[in-house]
Length: 248
Image (cartoon, rainbow, N blue to C red; front, side, top):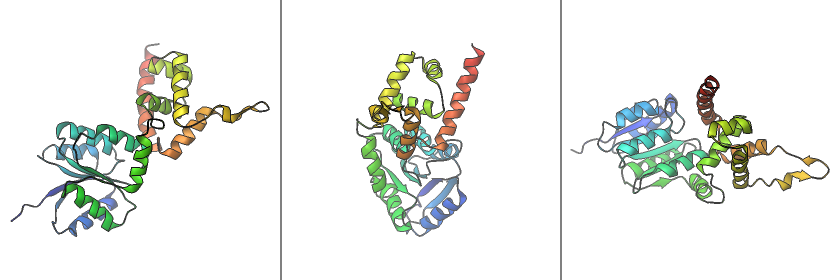
């Protein structure tokens, strides 16, 4: 008799977990489903297995799906993960593309798909050992992988800083830059976001728009930042600022 496969489901939403549990019960393999309510618990469970099979949400408490995958793949690069999420944010797609090991099989399916398509994606990755990427996510990958539009780590730092409302002086202190260095990073960011400074300037009105605010608006629309991840950025900034004020 063939041994039942075990699937770890990293999902903090009980209703979404129940949906997956019922869906997987309809699979003729009838896998054993184990729930982890966050990435940290999912990591502990997965590291105990030789070849982990995982379905993981992206946005979770304690540790998000991207960080969970990074830490799991560091130890077990053959682990197969299906990311299922309601988000196709460029920030997540960008982060995933940077951490997927060579030859690793993984998938990305949006929760908005039909249950038949979601099950097909899970079967393709976890059983057939083939990658499966949602067509909507592939479109985002195209933007993320293009050197004229994809943000570098430095440009993403600049975006996070202005999204938190930091001044040039504070950014310079935090990132160990000169004011000119800060402006250089911001100009590079504006270029990647296709924000033309001349476009929003006129002799009559001067600068019609605040470029920093415009950059944040464009980034929100592209999914380069969101409120969930900005909460983490805020927490990191507060830690740094507490150290900074104590030393000055």
